[in-house]
Amino acid sequence: MKQEFLNTLTQTLGKDAVITDPAEIEPWLTDWRGVYKGDAQAVVRPGNTRQVADCLRLCNEYRVPVVPRGGNTGLCGGATPDVSPSNIVLSMDRMNRIRSIDTISNTLVADAGCILGNLRRAAEEEGRLLPLSLAAEDSSQIGGNLATNAGGVNVVRYGMARELVLGIEAVLPNGEIFNGLQTLHKDNTGYDLKQLFIGSEGTLGVITGVALKLHPLNQVRAVVLAALESPQQALELLRRVYGACGARLQAFEYFTDECLDLVLTHVDGMHQPFGQRHDGYVLIELADTANEDALQALLEEVIGQALEDGLCQDAAVSASLSQLQTLWRLREEISEAQRADGPHLKHDISLPIERIPQFIETAERRLRQVSPDCRLFIFGHFGDGNLHYNVSRPQGAEKTWAAEWEGRVADAVFGEVAEYGGSISAEHGIGQLKRHAFHQHKDPMQIRLMLQIKQVFDPNSIMNPGKML
Ligand code: FAD
Ligand code: ZN
Image 1 (cartoon, helix red, strand yellow):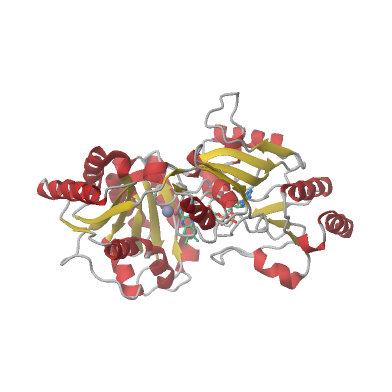
Image 2 (cartoon, protein in one colour):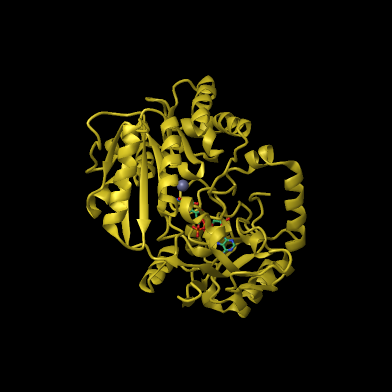
């Protein structure tokens, strides 16, 4: 049966699209972090939508589980197969063609396997901005970005990936093509079915094409790093800056002094931004299409007034592009510094923004009852209510600490998130990592509806088994 399936698949798609050599398959069986490892009988690399459709139709017929794979930068093991040797990994890497860019309707249409960074650069060449931006943008694919409804640093202004989507082309598990690749800005004809594929993590079908909204390209930027005596000040500052700068507010990122310390310890060439240490920091970026002096003046005026009114303790405003980049690195290098520090527990949580300061206080209290000496690294997209609430082993503890304490720490963190009406995943999704917590914390009625939708799209459950649902 297995051989018959592989033969038919190879005959239909061509030899170059189907890899079965175990040594060649090996690199496709683990996730980016090296936490998960699975098995598969083949890696399939279709070159167009028709081939994806042929592949899924055969998999459905032979009941072969399919794991869609984008750039493999997901942090929850979603693109890694489970241990069943009958899986196939369906890689989208050969589908990397930009189909069109239009600067009147401000739309970009592309294959789902295009690398996000390439799309951003292509839009920029046409004087337009594709605002979705994340540290993994030069490896992740737009199909993966939509399948995870990715966020990133510009969400405060442009929203999550979902808000940039006008159309989707996808292949259903039975091989039918869902042809929703339209660039209309308005379409109110019943249920908006394309939305179901966004954030579906490969459980409903394979996204093969995307139509995205573009924005005007921002030519000028201004950045300030503000020092805080408490997270409460970040709230007041957010209220003030948003009120004064409105849509120019491009990023509002937060990190604690512990994160800064980690960056200064592990990353070469980084310097203390202020004469003394503070409780935490926010990095604020404004951006506009033109008029650099006016933007800089606006930022300086708002921050000057905030300092006077006691909404922050100190502030470093960038006076050049290189200073701007240096300030950004203090925030962007946190993940790398954490990696250098060793295994840690990531929680990418979402909270009502106005309750973040209180959450930070009570969550730590709860966590310390479980592990009094663990180290906490809190940073993230404060302006969206999204914290990366990361927990590391106590000083001197073995590196195996993270694996041993994962469940107890997650129970404490997610338990507290639930008390605040928050979400256990703001942007990374569920995958394999948060499956248990998902079933623990998601409303059972909503899970029931999701399972019914899954049944409609994928009655034989071939799509990404063991993930999310
Ligand atoms: P993969 O990892 O390949 O897949 C992710 C999921 O999508 C899997 O379930 C897979 O089955 C499914 N999938 C992939 N392609 C398709 C397709 N064509 N059709 C159907 N299903 C598909 N995420 C954020 O949201 N914000 C961040 O700021 C952010 N920063 C990151 C920084 C770093 C350094 C790293 C490593 C990751 C970061 N991530 C971030 C997580 C990750 O980059 C995103 O989740 C990204 O959107 C995943 O895209 P990918 O192409 O790598 O998908
Ligand atoms: Zn993030």
